[in-house]
Image 1 (cartoon, rainbow, N blue to C red):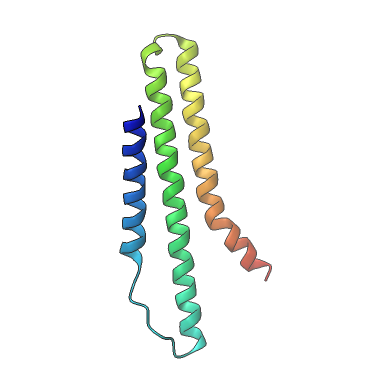
Image 2 (image 1 turned 180 degrees about the horizontal axis):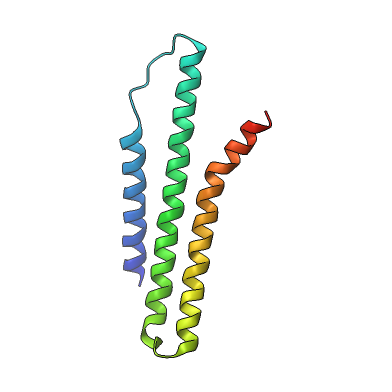
Length: 112
């Protein structure tokens, strides 16, 4: 069981590192405020993408864990109901987390 956890953590870390390193560009000095604002917006978008990706990865892992743990007793209707309820709750949490990652900065910008 510990080996599975280590492999999962390594895969998540590698995927996150690849996303971060792949999306970083060459940093150069900005000549005006518009260019600085553009770079800040691009950087914040990159951060939001990474956070959303992490939320999605954790959601997939949680849903897979629920399905795998309930799979042996799937003939029982109560267990099947419990499995689908758990997967639905994970899906709702992933949707809420992904939406909040993008909505909170947007709402903050509305009231500035």
